[in-house]
Image (cartoon, rainbow, N blue to C red; front, side, top):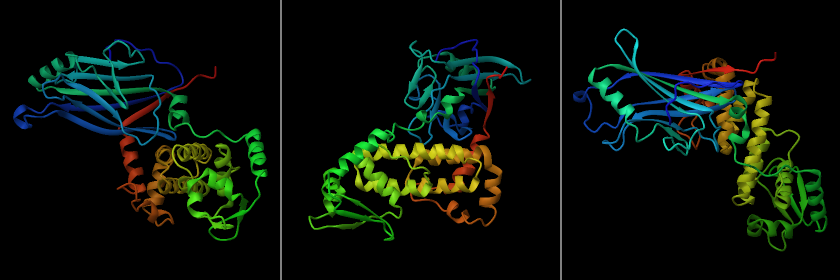
Length: 382
């Protein structure tokens, strides 16, 4: 990262600030091989989006210069691009005044050779001496240091689903729907796919599904005329059949969390990667859009969060947690944790894919979000 004196902020942005005060432990009070002075975990949450971070002041190997390291650790496919990330490290006098200060900024000028941006990690110049010299001086004089970390994002970028999810399958259009009808019309309907409760079914062609899916090749014989599918909603079967033939996502009029889960479960069995993942990405995007519509409904958000955890919709689960932290934190703690709500038991029970329960994940995100204050600089209507 390069050092600057000034930075002009743009309009319509969201800014996060995190502060941390510390002293360097004296050498006789710390291990001789110390490589990390401090490590702080916190979250930046805005509306229905959340990024989790680990901030370190470290040196590794031990004879290398000190550096600040900021790592994104949120569970999501992609990350929004920051307009700016800034570290300001102040050495404090005993009267509270600033004796010395360093500032490092990443603001898009990343071709100067002094910026280190590795995958999900931002860090100060690993070859710079200024930070190490400041640390040596502060340690010698037993001075307190204050570190301020600031993030600036375009507000639209921070909320844009293209910076959350991998690209999914194309949405079915009238043309692709006509293609599906034209292709399937050529084949006799000789296979009945029955829902698990036995109340609904879809007629299709056995040769067509065997050609398209190894799942059907494994279960069907030339004499099979009926197959019970582990799915209770016939719409899920229809959507997966359309995807099987056209590789387009047939968007239902209303995608409930339960329907999305059933489609995902069928896709996991019927298709192999990357086809199944593309359909899952389409489902996650659709669910995130539904969440943006229903964000004020706490029971809806909680139900969606539970379904997302069970179906391994990690991006949707993260957005649900962020939505609760942004809009419902106190109601969630009061209603879902401290009272006997019908969802309380499920929310307090750890799932199969995470050691912490959803309730613990929400409260952890809430308290971590308090460490990073946010503000908005919106475009004026004038």
